[in-house]
Length: 446
Ligand SMILES: Cc1ncc(COP(=O)(O)O)c(C=O)c1O
Image (cartoon, rainbow, N blue to C red; front, top):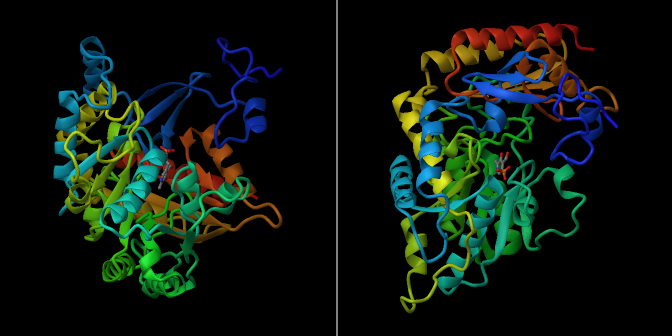
């Protein structure tokens, strides 16, 4: 039996099997959050900690924002649930319309899900079914990328490229291959913003096309900027080249924007930021500010149109969730979009903005500290890569995480990289606190 530290309402932590958590370490010294406001979490022991990670890259507008809280309160009194299939409610249509306006080009159709993982599965299934509706049913192969993270369902795990997430789960989905990743290019170390070197890695898609033949490939899925494997940026020209090769070969390009969506890069989406339009975009997280689970897949008109054939009384796409576009989530997302608009958050960290520059300078002020082997940044994202301890991968960064927590800062670590992705309302004083704290920790970390 474990006794949680200063948390009187809970006297047994054993029943809850925590996701992506070192359960035994946590339960021996729990870190319990009981409140949140703006840039801070309140802990069970009464302390406040600065949220350096927007929860899990999702609370982009900060915590407990009044517009969102009120939207949910009003909604629950008006319409708690309406069936997702063969019925609709007005907020689904309003929300889809507002979202489509944020996306460039032809990405005008929006399909609702409840998480990033579900958005990924939905996009993959749309891609395969799209080819079939057009008479190219042999295009079933899916191409992901090494070090990619696309959630934890079978399709997303299969196209994902993080071995710890894959190795325990058997054959996953067959007919999947992976592009080479773009991490660790020596010449790119300590780049400010998008790195210069590595555009040619996109040509790895040509290798896979030569191996499998384009006629068997349905889609390529990548994170425009990979978060979970440790903040891996696309080299300049890389995404453009992937787009070109996909178009040449009739392969759909899917961007997984679960973390880059909703203002993270200083534009509504990475699609806007990089000026590269994929055929499908998977989003979630910041859509409803993390308050209520929700995801959205954006599809180009041509994809939706391809399904709109056959008898009008027939379901066109045999896919959907009980909670797709549920009223509470739609209300939360509309309140979120209002907040983003009022505070101009989706473009607050735009390229060369005061806050983005301040962030970049703060990130690179860590150069030269012990064990710092690389620093990466874009928008309001940072990756601080540490040299692993011999024979103990991840241990050094995990210690940094624990020490930061004690010092009043929530960071996230993956492997030996510290990943930072604060709420987009962050002010310079918060940035100073975060990086001063990290500096002190790194100076003393063994
Ligand atoms: C790029 C990416 N895709 C998908 C997911 C999965 O999202 P969820 O945890 O909401 O299922 C994540 C989560 O971190 C992500 O970073």
